[in-house]
Length: 310
Image (cartoon, rainbow, N blue to C red; front, side, top):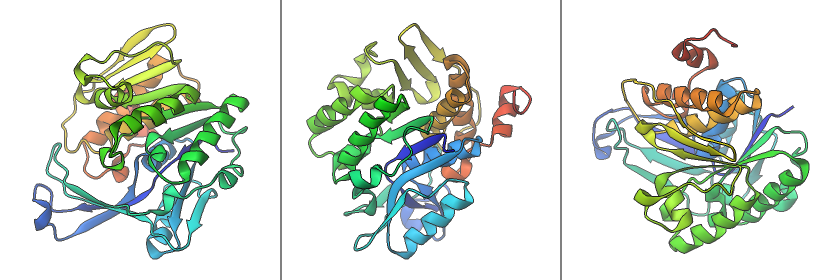
């Protein structure tokens, strides 16, 4: 039985292996899964969560590669659609540590924006423990309608819905549309995760003055090296920060989300789940790459100082 289903984009990511060099100097690249919701699925699978993805790839060689990569990562691809006539999304990234990652995306009419409500109707939403939706799906294409339908249906089945604010400004030429469309979608979410900039875009306010709202059951503000702030209907607390050498900040937020969801699926409190999430993020930033750098449950347990499975 699937425990976590993620909804949204998928890329083939190509990371420059000439670490520290400008992108134009790159000569070799390492291939890995990319796209925030797909990254979260991979990271959660590495933590022992049974995960599946609802996304789409083109009927192309890159789509073949993505499907095989998901399978190697232990992610169920039953609900990945093949879309003829369009291409699988692609991204190329340079690596200038710790936080400069020049990138270019090839997402001109990508396959993953063409999911439909009919395809969503095949999902086992009454059986899964949690669904994670990337807010990026609401920017364009029929996937927006499919995602909205999924979120409403999950509410009917009492399936926990997480929405990652996942703002990609280049996909939203009109910022007020992000606030309007994603704001409406959060009404069907149990947990909202985002950075200060993403919450500011959602609420159309200054990111420096943002305040979390108690209207949602749980809101999680990711603050990078400053940890995370978690607000539930009953309390507010800070997730811990782990002191690790920083190699790359790419993927840390996805690792954090996967850890948080994994903890909750396995019955941990919000505090314990946030601690697990912070440890996942810390290990990820200590490594290069993104989805290839997500930690196993054993590695997280070692950082937390507990025995595996505790």
